Image (cartoon, rainbow, N blue to C red; front, side):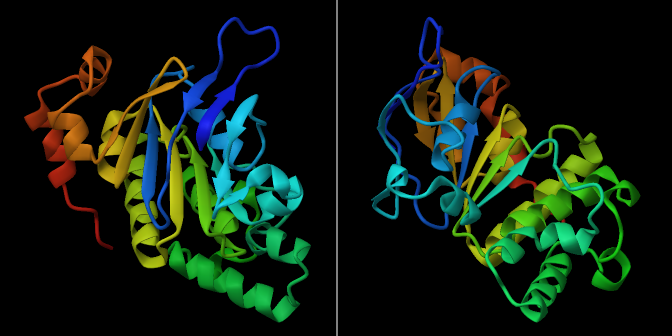
Length: 253
């Protein structure tokens, strides 16, 4: 992202202001900040759900605006809080949506669906033919992640995906997405306002405030060397207490 800015019509101030940011391939980057700080807007410039007012988004060195937006989005996974599963489709049909749009052969789609269900630890024989109404909140989010990964995207965008589930399910889902990232090494850009979630998941945290990036760095650097009073207040408690989150092992199942 080069000098990226987004200003919505009739807004007094930009939603995103002069952001320069590089996200490395295979990195798990967390955009962290309070509501209204611009983190979700910044995320959506990557898949062109939001068009920048100024500046450039380059993906593998290519300006995103040079790509057809529909084709671009089919190559970028996207997971949101509301999940958005098609209610009349089965789990298998939901997971296979993008491969079908891309014209994959049916046997290849079926094999990919089963592969992904196993990856997210939902037994294909049990879950393949279920409808979304037959899933728990955590299971539905897992299916949403599988759907986003179906076409083997190099980039996965996640916009507060676990905010609507309870704390126990959220911790389990955090473990799952961390494990999936370790196995696939997909580039992940993850939005959250939850400091503990950011500390647990991130290779690198990008802290935002009022549309600007105020600090970037690995979790321990954000804890030990906050850039300003805002970051210090965001992190909140004593850094040593927060460090316990970093040291907590991922749940292995």
